[in-house]
Length: 168
Image (cartoon, helix red, strand yellow):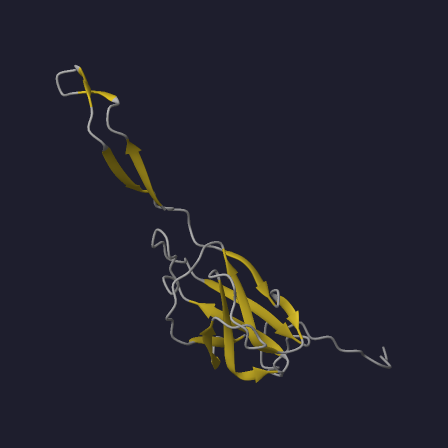
């Protein structure tokens, strides 16, 4: 923030020769910039298992600038499922009182089983004070068991029950 140091007239100060002299009124302004990184404090819903996705609220450690474009929501294979538009309103349409909260509103509600990632790119969001940019994040959510129905994945372990083994 901006700070002002005011020295009233008549206070003694040292001149360039090291002599004490009476001063005139002096005012000096200082701007202190917060250079701490911008981080995510919390999300709603929290990452992990959810029933569906439509509105993801992200709370940052500092106030953020406005004016961001839509970003992608990816499935477990990295394919774009839909886009998420940033908003400064909650799910009920009320404006947030704090400037460190942004909601990402998906253009399509996701209800199908699978793993989904809200991909917030690096340098996408910046702080109001200090202009530090966010390093980026991949917020991961799972609906159902996370299975997308793609059984062609050779990394999955498959179990079979064998009935009536005859030897001989």
